[in-house]
Length: 70
Image (cartoon, rainbow, N blue to C red):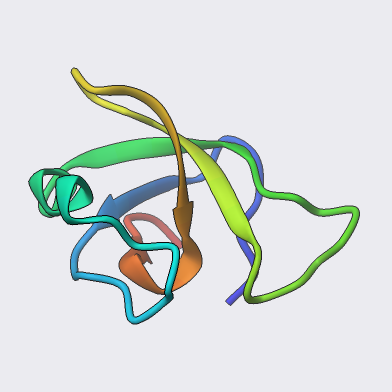
């Protein structure tokens, strides 16, 4: 799945990526906006930067997100 800057997403599951940290589990269920999708690399394994409501900006693995709008 390719993410775009400004896209609304939800952290809906724990990632299987090795970069997933236990503190990230508190983000599950939160909504946010993609701020840096790393489009220049376009690597599905790359982390993307997302601004989460009430939690600030974080770099998270892509497999924990789902889009909230088409």
